[in-house]
Amino acid sequence: MSLGPLLILIILVAVVSLITPAFLKPVNLGNILAQTAVIAVVAMGQQLVILTRGIDLSVGSNLALATVIGGLVYQQVDSSIVVIIAMLFAGAVVGAVNGVVFVHGRLPHPFIITLATLSICRGLALTLAPGHTTMRGMPDAISAIGGGTTLGVPNSFFVVALFGFLFLILTKAMVFGRWIYAVGGSPNAAKSMGIPVKGVLLATYIISGFCAGVGAVLLAGRTAAASPIYGNLLELDTIAAVIIGGASFLGGRGHLGHALIGAVLIGVIRNALNLLGVDVFFQMIAIGLVIVIAVEADVLRNHLEARARALQSARVQ
Image 1 (cartoon, rainbow, N blue to C red):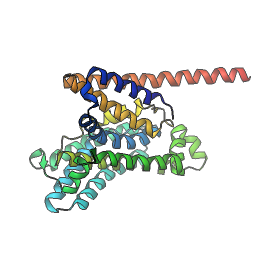
Image 2: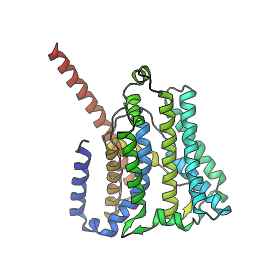
Image 3: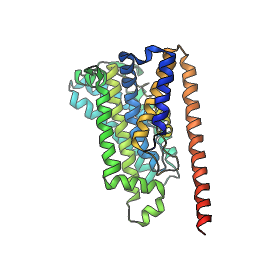
Image 4: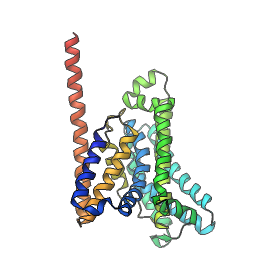
């Protein structure tokens, strides 16, 4: 794994800690971990999609819809397990819709269907939520998962660590992980090798939707509420995390650890700007600029690598 993103994070933390000493206080570091958990979990699913040359714009609205469904279920059944299953299932269903329509509808790019479900899920969330607003209350276990701490460390951090471990096994130790990289590297070549390209693509969107459901559990637990306005611009945060971490929109490149580092980078930037009293609207501008810089860096990197391969080929000849 390239150490570039990690070095950038270390430098950023060092600079911010010099500018505002409050940054390194345990309470503030715990806040960063808690605030970053949702982005980190959803970014893991987004990373798989981007590895296959795709994109999932629906994750934020999907998360909002999942919390609303969880809140409605909680009004009927006071069971943490049932509410959690409802939110995870809702997220996975939206992911399945994205995958089925993209793969079997033969759309030219997943941007189209995920943009559509972004709007549909947000509309459904607003329609289903009583009064089109926030529903207060979540089972104690969910509040503990999303908002509790263990030995001073947010419980949501342990959820991120668990999913990070599972995704690491998936991408590095399982055949399916190799298939994902192969499909992203060259779909036609992967198909000629006997890899079930359509199945792989469908699975990645289901996983992305499932991760949005996990994010819904964490956010609903942290706020002890369900809201149709949750997850606003989460799709941009997760895409930024993945691209900042070194993944490529051209597919077949990226490391899970980089996506997590990218998520923490976004959390650190936001937290630092908050501590410095920077206006929230400027924070949106800052994150947007970070995305532009990361994408341009990806384009430049691919251009330089293409030139290097051309020069090496010329030398061999």
